[in-house]
Image: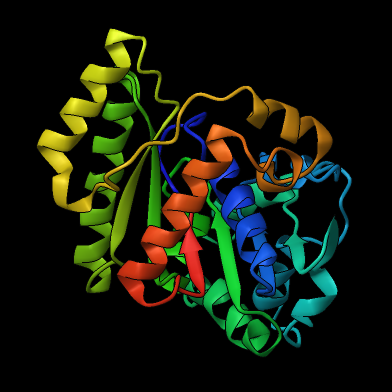
Length: 261
């Protein structure tokens, strides 16, 4: 899950798709690649104080140490079959510390290869800026989901994100297929309907044909530390993400094991 604008629903998308997959009996890992740690905080962990986090993977690589036992970084979420690899705020220093070192763009890909026998899906929540963490996510993922709030400024963020993908694709020989997911849609407002029309006109082939509506149950689920499908299974937002998951599964035969936020 990735977008170069914050507040568009990346963390909500990761949590909800993870909860829905876990409810299907899949073993799911949520991977928090954002130093701000919204995904980590969702499950009541503090990125300021978390000792075992994604940061350990990069530190071991930079020190030339033995690879970290990836499963040792996983934390329980309180939801069966749904685990979390938390973020720490120390990850914000990675570009300064390691950005110029060779081989640092494949740390996550190598870690997930070691984790693969133990899980069915990994969903990555990415930071809203291009750097070593986003590069790692793009190198590791099989499908990119771009949540986009249906309002004007978010469309500008989408344009920046797509330019970034084009740039990364030129330097790395391609990027994974992407799906744009319209979020926070409010049919009562002209701004939302016009933004959705704009998305459909400009990005029709890349756009999921439905929308995730504004739904206060997302906030309530977040306060409870649960995916919305467990907190409020009949909510409009829960049903929208269930539809998105079915669409992805139909489009790909199965949802790819790794999706980047």
